[in-house]
Amino acid sequence: MKEKIVIIGGGVAGLTAGIYAQKAGFESAIYEKNPVLGGQCAGWKRKGFYIDNCITWLTNGAPKFPVYKMWKEVGFLGDENGNEIPCRQHDAFWTSELDGQSYTFWADLERAEKEMLLLSPQDKKEIKAFFKAVRMCEHLRVPYEAPLDMMNLFQLAKIGISMIPVGLAMMKYRTKDLSDLAARFKHPLLKKAFTDYLPKEYLASILMNAYGSISNGGGDVPDGGSLKTAQRMEAIYKKLGGKCFASSPVKEILLEDSPNKKGKKRATGILLENGEKVFADYIIPSCDPHYLFENILDKKYMPPRLKFAYDNPDAHRKGSTFHVAYECDGPANEIGRRTFFDCRPFELAGVTVSRINMKNYNKDPVNAPAGKALIEVKVLEKEEQFLYWQKLRQEDKAAYDAAKQKAAADILERLEERVPSLRGKMKYLDAWTPYTYTRYCNAYYGCFMSFITTKKSSNLFNISGKLKEIENVVLAGQWLSMPGGLPMAMTSGKFAVQRILRSQGKSIKIEP
Image (cartoon, rainbow, N blue to C red; front, top):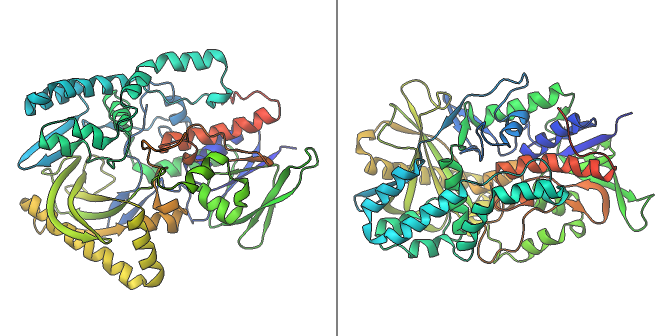
């Protein structure tokens, strides 16, 4: 009889864990609180337009990278029949504007460096240093064969040697955040540009790694976006024999004293909100860990490093975004992939906003009907803004909806001021807040990634997910390694299954 693994949460980590559990010979089942699986890897339709919530680019998402095999295997870049999914490689990261000037961070680093030097010859030294670091970060490779602490010496050496350039780049900027990086430049536009895409508290190396992940040709986006990706993952999982239970929130992990190890607990299964008990040999919680240890499992079982992070919020900041999407009657070619610009100040969630960005989803026909465009604006928000939206939604839903509509109208006015040719062509589609992520995904402070990696952050990389006091529960999810994101979520699902195999004394190599 096959041993059973129950997976709590049907996001990317949970689906990946399910796929590899089936491949490893287990019987598995996923229990998801929402009607559909995918977690934050989601998208939805509005008036014939498709709004994508998640995939911006896939790190190492091209055939030349070793992890491409895994991206394909779990459904990001392949389907249940083994077919490859067509992808788009962006020609630019983003564009920043200021006082009539603009600069684009092209995927072509030669072009990007040349244009930055033309823009600001006085910053030549810093420009050269920045692009040298980005080129070094192009060597970033996603470890996917096994968790680092379970790799053999040959595997560790192979990864270590391949990533020496990345390590050197990160060492050079290890004490610099994006505000420090921006301060090194003299040109006003460059000072602004380097704090546009990510919060200024982020370590500079995070931006460089992200840029290198696009410039190295691996920043692909699968056609169909996040919703289709989640559907492919679910189809692959089911084809392997996995079972999915949507609209099945978990209330509790059932524990008993371990019969094998004195002083330890053993999970026997889960209790669903509807009162049903599901028994299992192993549990993989892939839901938000803060929610897990506040609601499903006693917080005394939380891994110490995670607990330290939650208990020291000043050093472990959270970030999310306010989003608004518009339909456009036309292709809106005046708007590039993503452009940041100053605007007339307006109030949003108790904060004055004077700089926003606009993104045109016109490269994938899934986003908009022929001849039209989907325009999206994101405004970075911090913990205080999350609390604003949370309080408003919980106390007065009508006021919450009105605040979203007011913000959408204010932003639309600024878009039309920036792009007068589109005046009257754009209409409101949808808006969502940081609290939306909490309502639908139990996301801690509405985060769509893990903690912001700052100069004060502690070591939150490669957390094993094993619980010291419970012998058969292994965590999965992006929060096990900063800064989170899709690669961390995906690989953590596989790693959780490998840890179970290792606990049984079996080979951790999972064959197709």
